[in-house]
Amino acid sequence: MNKTYFDVGLSLDGCLAGPNARPGNPLGDGGLSIHEWMFRTATFQRVLGTGNAGHPGSRAVADGNAADDALVQAMFARPGAYVMGRRMFDEGELGWPEDPPFHAPVFVLTHKSRAPWVREGGTTFHFVTDGFASALAQAQGAANGKDVRVSGGADAIRQAIAAGAVDDFTLHIAPLLLGGGNRLFDRALPLRCAPASAVHSPLVTHVHYRART
Image: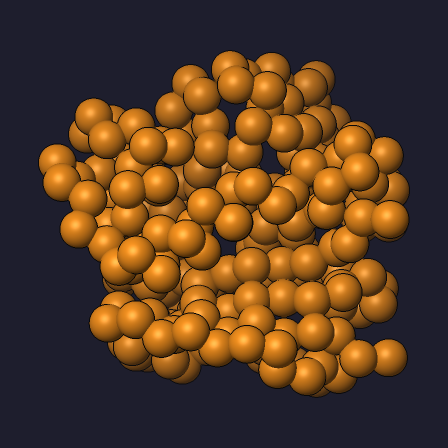
């Protein structure tokens, strides 16, 4: 049976994104720095395309940590489908390449209906207007036995937590303070968890948790 999880980068002050996040300024002011560790890995550059000069993480040479690269490989290999908030979709739509990094169905939470958006590499964005439970059920049915990743943003993840749907999660904690922005845990949430593992590298600390009932 597939599991539902989230896997996100955070600043030290708990932000998924900095201030002023919007289409054209994805992840807000300073927010891209949260993912500097990932941008440096060979796997990320291969998936996004090293020559994609329009992507802020593009580099001519991959100089990332080997442990970080292994985690990015697992990050892309695990999900068979995604649930995503409309705000995250709107910010990403302008910057994702023709072959987005998902390579699986993506179910976007929205209040506005839209025909499915078919992209290269197996990614199709489906727009779900009847709530998180419906999006999750559709993702589980489309995941082909693999797990479902709730990609973000923060509101979509909080909906997953509130629904009691989260089986485990990983936080990639970057050593920087944004001083404001979109905080993931900005209110009390019904989530009990236990640490499962922690891995440190020069640019980030990866902490994996299991949800407890």
